[in-house]
Length: 202
Image (cartoon, rainbow, N blue to C red; front, side):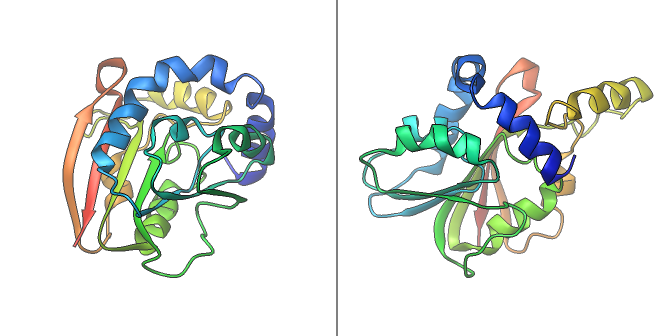
C-alpha cells in the first residue's frame, strides 16, 4: 500500500463506506470513545477521521481536529461535523503538521492497518500528544502468538489491495514509544481480531 493507492481506493469506498461499516463498527467506536474519557475543553486529534463516524459518539464540549488523506472521505465527514467545534483538514497521518504536545488525546479508528506505515502514524500521534495524554486505538491486528503462514500472507496481500492490512502486530507499532503504558487491550470484533487499546503517556 502507498498513499496514492489509498487515495484511489478510498475515493471508491467513500460513497458506500457508512452503509457498509457504520453498524459493524458501532460497538468498537463507542467503546474507544468511552476509553478516551474526554473532559470538557479537551482537544482531540483524529488523524484518520474518514467519513466522520467517530463524531457520532463524541461529547459536545471538546475541540476536535480531524484529518484524512482522502478529500472524498472528508467531504462525507463535513456533514457530521456541522454545528460542532470540529476542524477538518487534508493530512497525512504519517507526517503531522502540528507542534509537539498539541493534543490531550488522540483517536485512531481503523487507521493503523490502512496507512502505508502504521508505526510512523502512531509515532506522530504520540509526538503531538501532551504528557499525561492518552491514545485509543480501534483496529485489527495479527495476534501476537499467531504465526504468519504463507496462506495468511497470501490472503493479507489480497485484502491489502482493498486498502487495509490484516497482518500487522500491535507490538511492532508500539516499539520505541517513550513513556508508554498500555492501560487497556480488549478484544472487540471477530473473535478478537479487532481490538480496542488505550495507551497512556507519562
